[in-house]
Length: 129
Image 1 (spheres, rainbow, N blue to C red):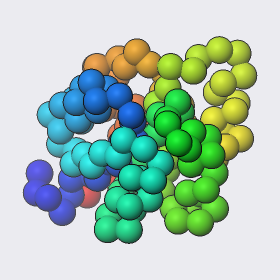
Image 2 (image 1 turned 90 degrees about the vertical axis):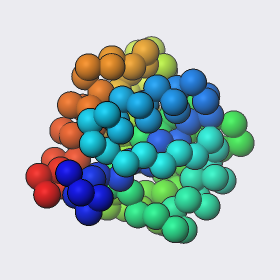
Image 3 (image 1 turned 120 degrees about the vertical axis):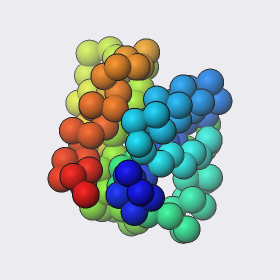
Image 4 (image 1 turned 180 degrees about the vertical axis):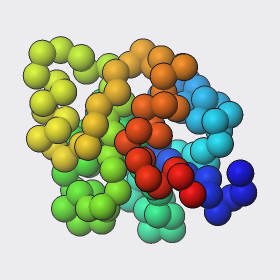
């Protein structure tokens, strides 16, 4: 797969271990991964890249993932799918992520085998090259 057809994923996550894990899983499956450890860093990245999909942790420092998603959807990335990747799995959490503007929801701990399939399903036709 050449670089032109590699889907680009921006992963917004403050935990470095989670960033390494997701990067390894997705890069092994042919994705390109950019990382941001905070909301402000995500804004900076989005000035220079246009990802095909954003994976969003909800429990972030400075700006939480709900607020960041709402802001991105209203200002910068209305057409880019934003998927919550979160340990917030209590009753009502999924609904709260959808209300904030997330297009989907993936629970932590991450299922290593399922993650690439889940990401592809949210990308839909974009991965067919």
